Length: 377
Image 1 (tube, rainbow, N blue to C red):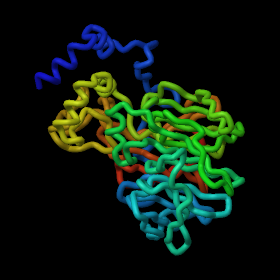
Image 2: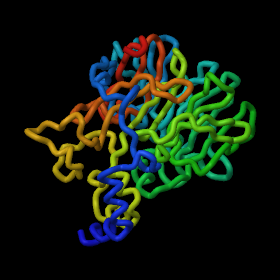
Image 3: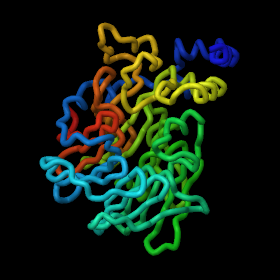
Image 4: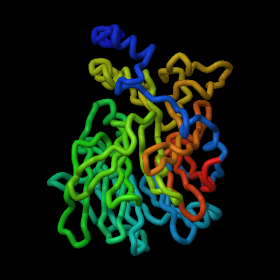
């Protein structure tokens, strides 16, 4: 405990206390409030449960009103929105960490430690992308396929696989890459490197470029795939952005797998504290964001998160949270769906429209949700 206390107080003590108690609105570390199109509500809790699936990670609506979902090493098919229950299409050699459909109806999957594979009708998997720039692709987090068959892939880290995302965050890494594989090409090219956990990618309907999220940088960028030039679409987000998908009415649907808090931001600036914490404490009990709430007295909380009579206040600083947001092509948030502290549909890792609904993967809530996409209320 003495090491923890000293590391917190020895580094810019007055500035740290001031930033924690009265966060500056102009400092880049300040967390913006949830207001405007991001105003808290309970709309995610009100969504219909399409299916109960263990830790669903990514999903793709199919043309026949089915939904393809990844869960661990399995790829599942929810026929008619889950009416008949999940059917296993394939079981792969590693955790399935991304899904995408091709223009010819093909199904592609990112597999931790393997790369990108094409999934056949019989459940087999053929390798498509295993390395780029002389390094293996072992942390694919998102895939987008253009109409001409060009594939874009985000490779989140050269050190950690997707399941170890929190360790990558705590180690302050920025090793992610944006990759492109052209049809008929002998190998993939690295469009950009040094990214802070790129977790989502989408074709930009407004420009010839693509859109990429960077979770640890809390931002969304438009990217020119020819030059690798980045232009910010939305910066200093209040949470960690995950996957992003074009909205049918324009703009994008963004999944946010956790919110930032001042306590975690403080810890991320304290190298000695983080190293000691990671060395001596089980990861479940780190000061960290999470995909779901653990009901344990060992979980560290900010003061506002202390429960009264077994109830967590919905405005408490969140360890886990559920958030899906729609933003316009200008980067402004239009509407959002929330599952606040005390609720259960947290850790949203994917949200994609299709077949008249928005399909949502609540990885922390073990559910695939369905929300009618009729526009903002």
